[in-house]
Image (cartoon, rainbow, N blue to C red; front, side):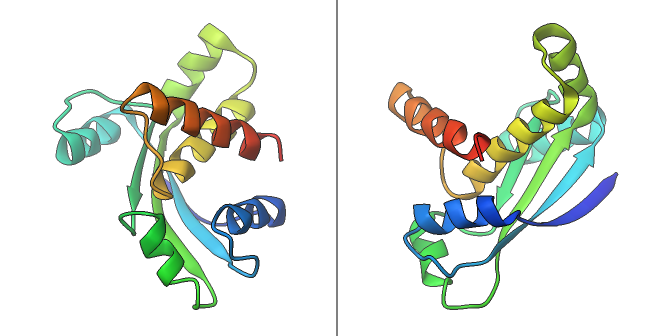
Length: 138
């Protein structure tokens, strides 16, 4: 498993700081590339689902309000994002356009989950997709 502590690119960090209305915030996350077996195990432990998935997020904070309370610190570690590269490759083969684009999209999706976004109902889906498009365009 590849483990990367990612210091967010300046543009993405700035966009997150704006989303949280705290312009001087500095964020980091851990992105881990995992096998389908590892993803299935994590998905089962966290959500009771026995299948592998393309991305899972494990936030350090429960919601945006908790994150905002910690913004007085220099760096804010938001949590872990696990991405299954082999599932991402299958999605690219089916839908395109490239593995790099797919991994970026999955990382942003995971990042939004770390910020408390979800997609359990239509309203949440619309809100999350809007934020995802905004961050992806950076």
